[in-house]
Image (cartoon, rainbow, N blue to C red):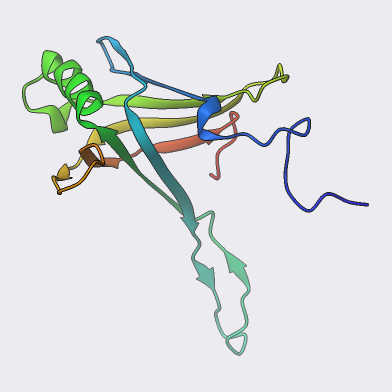
Length: 154
């Protein structure tokens, strides 16, 4: 019988298996476990040539690539990242860095790697609310390229 869920050696990768490093260009590499989430996406927008073929597609362009990502950090993680960026330039939105997400589930030797290349901070938002949840800071990123195990969309 075929499995109905994706696994690696019967152990599905989880957030507990993730390691994230943030090398700042020309600066230190930020290693923190104070990251609550990371979200990334990329896409290619393709142009089409139709000509006088009755509206049918004749050809398409290579396309235009775009990528985006968001880091959600706990307050201590944001402070660590912010200080590393500010040590290069107090205008932290001008400092470039990569985000490297790696995981190896227990019992595996292979490493799955997503590299978010050429990031810059676009903004920050936080919310303090009543309750027991820790404060988090959401940081949208400007991204140049996303590599997944060395593979890119374009």
